Length: 216
Ligand code: G6P
Ligand code: MG
Image 1 (cartoon, protein in one colour):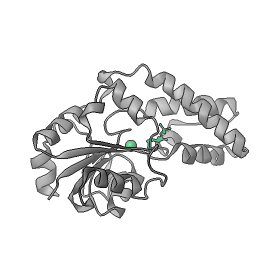
Image 2 (cartoon, rainbow, N blue to C red):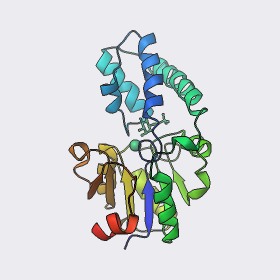
Image 3 (cartoon, rainbow, N blue to C red):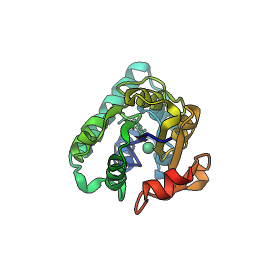
Image 4 (cartoon, rainbow, N blue to C red):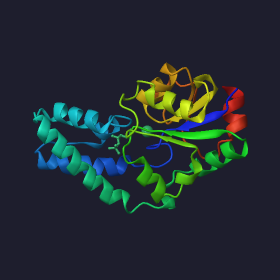
């Protein structure tokens, strides 16, 4: 029986990919490499370090460990400048409603995100108080598709993984939920998220019980 919901953040609750894109593109430009929106798509769900490593590979550049650390810090400063302008208007359609439906149904809710900026984002969009647990990149070390982030979320809710339902927009995130023996709703394209138990294009108009839990 589903007793807990674990939400990914970026791409499920808020669309921060556009801000990641601006910050990574600015870094890439300074390093003299091209960085496209298509490449940015491939960074969804990928940790900050994993992302810079991919950009280095695509741009065919090498950086020392110290330079990698420095660029990750600079990129994050630029990213945070964008985040600082966010407000509730940037919550993705349907996200607040699904959270409300979960709470009304007596389900516990956790965040399960790779981001180290999740708390500041949830504060900006005024959702931070809705979560019973917040598990993010500051808490876990293994990246999705490793299930650590979701298993930690389930543990913090005091639930077995089998009783948890994950909402994810990234392929690695869907795999992480499956690896953690959880049910998973893919939010996005079935071409990318086909391994999920259910795929929906977005959260708008979704009835948690009828459209998801009863069908999973
Ligand atoms: C999410 C996003 C990724 C991002 C990662 C780390 O998974 O989808 O694009 O790289 O979080 O985010 P951070 O805010 O810690 O740089
Ligand atoms: Mg995501």
